[in-house]
Image (cartoon, rainbow, N blue to C red; front, side, top):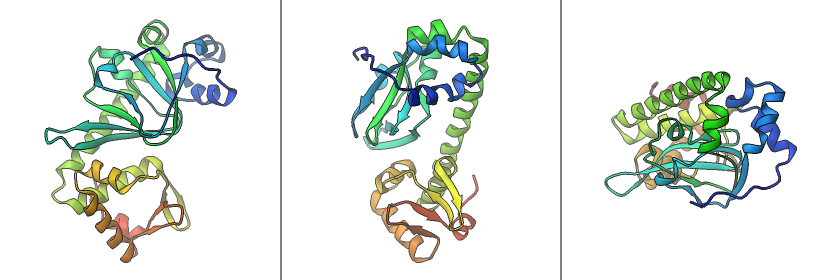
Amino acid sequence: MKAPQPKNKNARNINLLRNIPFFQSLSDEDFSDLQHIFVERHYARNKTIFLEEDTLNYMYIILSGKVKVIHSGLDGKEHIVAIHQKGDFFGEMALLDGKTSPATVVALEDTLIAIISGKDFEKYLLKNDKILRQTISILCKRLREAWMMIKVLSLPNAEDRVRAVILIVSDFYGYMDARGTILSSRLTHQNIADYSFVSRETVTRLLNRFARDGEIEVLENKDIVLKSSFTRKTVEL
């Protein structure tokens, strides 16, 4: 993978970087000293951001857009491990332990990412005690997310897995209003299928049934409203 070329960074992107967990504990002066290590790169929808062998090179911070982390099983099928959006970051674990991650990251939509090289990560971040404490907290969160997905896979049938995946995604990307929980992550039926280890046709059939039963409502902009009845029927993880 060729080293990304720098682009001009605007104030909005710098402000977003300032507020991600890695850098929130730094003083303005300390953060200002780090701004030169960020390199911006644009990825079009469906473009591969990195393959497994590239994970040792960079840490990635999403400035806009959304990406999926996928893993190909022994059956050759693609399974979604995680979805990251604006303000999320990934790749830090490979830089910490020097091991590649068994996954590929692909842009779900046009995405702008700030990249930190492994060399700069070690030189400027790992030597900062405040950032090290944030790193421990972040790794604990990643571990909890992994446990959650393992629990999803342990559920006995397709409907329970699909319900659980929708509820988990709503916890990360949903918001409440008078209608219920609004899931606005723009997940396709195929994305939900990849998360749940079921077919796309099964997801479509189940979502149609949930809608007929009044458990969910699909809005004109494709956002999904989760009603209280949906939550009550979903297995707690």
